[in-house]
Length: 316
Image 1 (cartoon, rainbow, N blue to C red):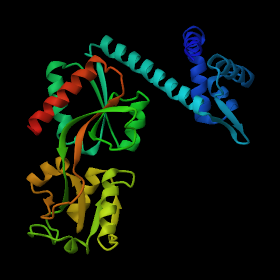
Image 2: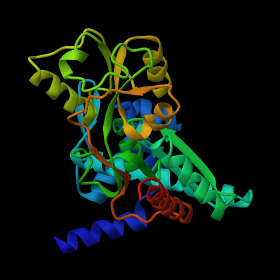
Image 3: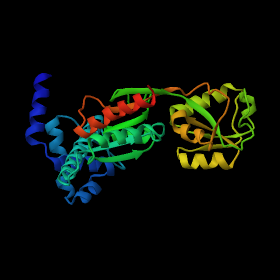
Image 4: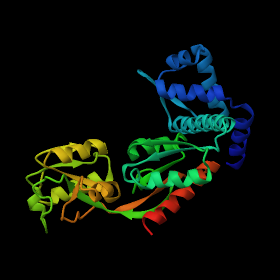
């Protein structure tokens, strides 16, 4: 087994070409060798030969043929995943070199979830810019379902926000920054705004703004609703757009479930109101997710340190 592994590694170092990996990634995307070959400007026979050579070198079958095209085997999926990561790292290296040539002090790409956007990320950026005023920073907002695959593919350096509890845990490492809780919030003119000791029964006549189905918070909310005599909201709006949710809460008698970190400023300024109903679910850690066993670039390490400093300021 050791000899076989060493033999394959030696072949990968001496014979594997980037154009072969590009072809693998393209075939995985198209599900068809002919279309993948056309997209790369090579002939189908040449593409087929390149795949056969790879299969011989790695001593595994990379694709299964079907009546609709080709489907990657588990070996093909693994090599495609690593190929994507290699190309992402090459792209990042080229971008970082370009940034350095333009006078920037490195580059960091950060995926952010809603809970980290209003205060944690801005404060971390401010702290980073004190030490690295010319750093290039790119922020990408989304859900875990969108950002975690991009993290694993090397397209982002880290994801900051509520830490996922199950999915992707075997491929990422997590660093907790602080605990956050979920609030039930409304607009200032909502009938329940300002009332004390609200019960869940009093919220039932109103519609809710809820997070997407694939999120942990939504699963917790649905589980709670089912336990309340199979309660189903009269109106249910699924949205992760904070600006949209904020406008809807201010214009309609809806109730929103929001991380406390997200709504703190709007509550402080009177734009939203926290209901006096303690949400019995949703507390969870806010932190950063990183690729397992992989070093960050210098700008990434600096931003990670800035995140810890910002968290200590916001939640001493």
